[in-house]
Image 1 (cartoon, rainbow, N blue to C red):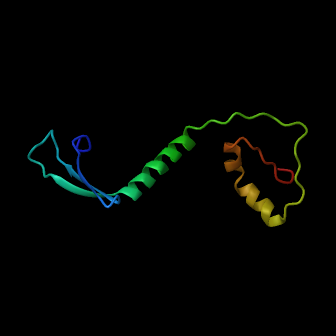
Image 2 (image 1 turned 120 degrees about the horizontal axis):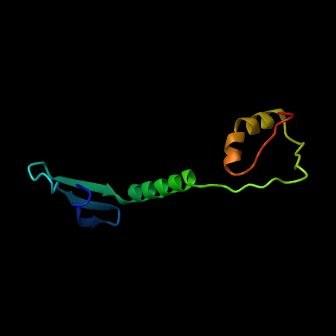
Image 3 (image 1 turned 180 degrees about the horizontal axis):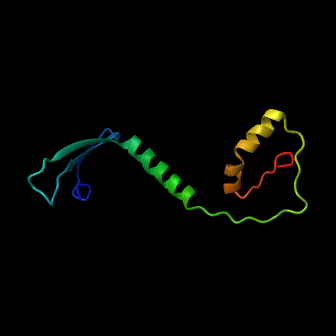
Length: 100
C-alpha cells in the first residue's frame, strides 16, 4: 500500500527521483523520504520484464529431416554443448552429442 501512496516530489539532474511514502492504512507508522537512482530503477524494470518474457516463453519446435550434423567440434566444445543442451532445448534445439 505504501507504493500506491508514493508522491514524487522532485527529479534532480535527471538522475534521481525524490519520493515521499506514507502508509494510508496506518497513519501512526513513519513516513519515508526515498531517493531513487533513476538509471538503476530503469535497469531493474528492464531486467524484470526480460525475466518475465523468458519464463513465460514457449517455443514451437519441428523436426528437421535429415538431421543436421556438425563434425568440426573440439572435445572441449562438445563438452560445453553437452553441458548446455538443456538451455538449447529451451530454444527448440535438440542436441545429441556423439551417440548420446
